[in-house]
Image (cartoon, rainbow, N blue to C red; front, side, top):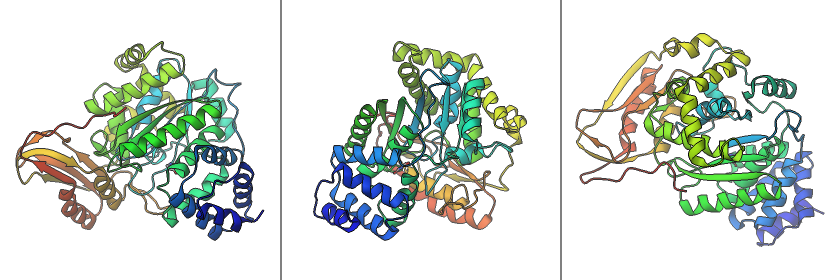
Length: 431
Ligand code: URA
């Protein structure tokens, strides 16, 4: 076989065989197919798509391009949760301790933020000392002893995806449903997941901007999961506006801790309860969603969920004094308020523009490996559908650089849309 023939076949809208896909994936994993051919192939896939069968073959070839983690000697069911990424999405920080407190152990590998979308590892690293580079042995040991792990991908899970994703990121080929589905599912299968709750974000601050595309992605991933022997529940949730109020690393950790104490923003808390309930049902700890939800509420109300968060942070070397007193997180030097310059109902709180503003302050990175400033970010004071009076606070900006603060402040007004009539609040979930 020749890589160029496989590229041409996809360019001409052909359907690749399992053997051709495996040849291509093995070739680029081992460096035998150069980046320029992989890039051309990715563009052909983006433009011409893949059938569900091709996407499944691609997923399995990428999943088997490296080690496959086996957790069967550690947990009765290897449960995972994955969000397709968004702005202010600190759900894992709440949901993990909640379900663990309800008796469902979870070891999760998360990623860093890239572009306007934040990353769980960057958030957790706001806590001094917190380690995100556990070895496989440490991962299993901690999952066995504490029932909770939240770390990075420290060994070579699905290395083919690592290579392909890095190329997609710089060749305009991220936004392809088959490539996104295979990228996410290959890592989950390689991480040994037997059951996954997938939280697919839809809207202005998500990879999938329309419900139609999000549904296609959801169906594809659910189908791939089933074929790989993994049960998948997919939720379609809103990412037109940020989730919760805080956007930025330590600000989001503080919001997560408040939520674990029962005080977080109501929409974010509701989102976490719903995801937790699905995990508890899928993990056979609750017979149906309503019970799962009540279990999750009780874990927060009793303090058991917060206690599990403490167990997690302690196990991974984090400074507990920050968890017990979030007032200790370093403050950004400059704090500014943007106030409404009119009265009306908010019709838009643009998640992507807000995510980009947080990155511009230094909360995120535009290139892999850039440092992040854990203290900076934004608090968004209102949601779509809320009535706001002129002079009320819209956003608080936390900055360490007055120049960036000024630039972000000027641009942020464009994130807010106004209506003179009542405007419906956005749902948390679409399906
Ligand atoms: N997350 C991934 O891991 N891969 C994608 O392609 C998109 C989001």
